[in-house]
Amino acid sequence: MDANKLWISAKQKLKGSFPKSFFEIYFNEESIPIAIKDHVFYLKGNIRTKEFFENQKKDILLNAFSELAANINDVVVMTDIEEELAFFDTIDKENAKKDIKKDERAKLISKASNISNANLNPKYTFDTFVVGPSNNIAVAACQRVAGSDDILNDNPLFLYGGVGLGKTHLMHAIGHDVLERDPSKKVLYVSSETFTNELIMAIREKKNDEFRHKYRSVDLFMIDDVQFIAGKTSVEEELFHTFNDVYAAGKKIILSSDRPPRDIPHLKDRLKSRFICGIMVDIQAPDYSTRMAILQSKAENDNLYIPKDVIEYIADNVKSNIRELEGALNKVILYADLSSKELNLDTAKEALKDILVSYKTKEINVLRIKEMVADAYNVTVDDLNSKKRTKNIAFPRQIAMYIARNLLDISLPNIGDEFGGRDHTTVMHAIKKVEDEMSKSEITKVKIEKIVSDLNG
Image (cartoon, rainbow, N blue to C red; front, top):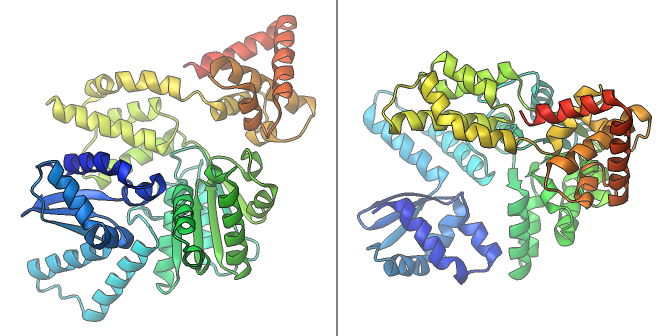
């Protein structure tokens, strides 16, 4: 019986048995089915899910398995600590000559425990992050924050940039670096979704004090994708006080978002003011040489030989982010394997023909439009988002609004939100202004049409 299929079926069956927020905490993507052996269902998770599935709700899960005609008698959740122990046991058995001293073993297991409790991905370190012109300043800032106790001017560190550019990787890398330097430090990484779900659960179960102790008694607090808490009053309130307590204690704070704080719609001003009081660094889409390096690094880490022309083809066609790049490479490898074809340039083109068509459509978004317009008019994306009204900035901003309205399925108020919180009447005026200018000036018309053509690939 396939463990993954059984887990998916069990989740579907149990979805209505728990509150949504509760379900998302315990049945999320971090709970990974490993195998079924001797009628035991093995699951990978953290300490919290281990307690939940092995003790509190084991009977409910076993009943679900039974209703699915699966002969499962027990549930075992493997945590990172247990995997670490199993790893050392394997080494001890296979190579007795490499005897790990007890104190070294204890330190390594303690480190595994710290990493697990901090919610850190073992693969996300500074060593595995590919540095290039698009992210080198962000990497330097992260390494500085991780390696220094002098946080007077560096707190908080706010990372911003599009999806899949490495913000999460860098946050985890900071956590690993801090623990490497001092394993006694209490580090905590959390997504905004998990923070929200755990707050809801704490309120429901009247465990507010436990929640606050968890998040406020740390040496390093990291919260990812803070844009998703905007407009959620109770969550913003809790994060505000968490921020204040951690900051007042002289501890480090790292935050990330897909945009600068001032451009996050509906985020309370008092949070914005705190987010911008330290260092803000952006991460841009990787350039060609960095995309090549990312693909080569992935191939090396996976012990795969990928022809250079295949890597060049992917790097030349997939330009948006790291996640898209690695996904394209995975698709080529899988396609070659399943079709029993040689992994060469022709196979790569065949494997990616559909994904590249959809990619070209998908990559057109407000940020991409801003980048193209900013480049064409020698301004910055920050200029377009700002309150500046000088003509050399105001008109490109209006052009970007005009293009967004014509190329994207997005409302006028939403366009306004994307440009520093402007209202829909400002957007309407911008569109009318650009249309008038295009009717009067052939040069302006051709320039805007060129931007649109480039966006459409």
